[in-house]
Image 1: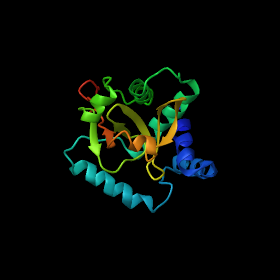
Image 2: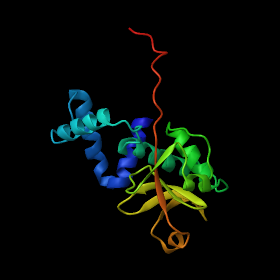
Image 3: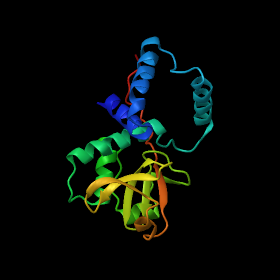
Image 4: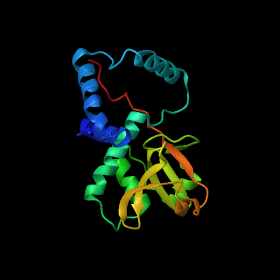
Length: 186
């Protein structure tokens, strides 16, 4: 199910025509045990080196953000028109495997321990106004997923309606440290 979600989210961001290419690269990397492209290797190494030197808690990666978007799109098919924005976002993050204690949109706007404020959003980040919250789908297109007047859907956070709601803030999920003391050595 998780692999399907990643591919659906990638197709949403890149366009449906990119899905066969994404699947082929993923399959090639899995069967050969190598990276999909050699150009990615130095970037991945640099990212790993940065992570090991950083003392800041790890945040949601772009790939994990895509799984949040996939959960959002899945929720649209099963979603209820009656759920408010903060409960919808909470349920989507939980479905994607990134749980946090429920917080209202006003609480999220002020900041919580589970999210770090960021200037440049990536897919899966929260887009928050005082009184409303959604999930960034495509930062280039400024698209987000949330509860809208017609139910769960996608809109632009640059639309006049959202601009009139006041300053927007973006937050990225902070991943919890994995406990290893309960794992028995092999």
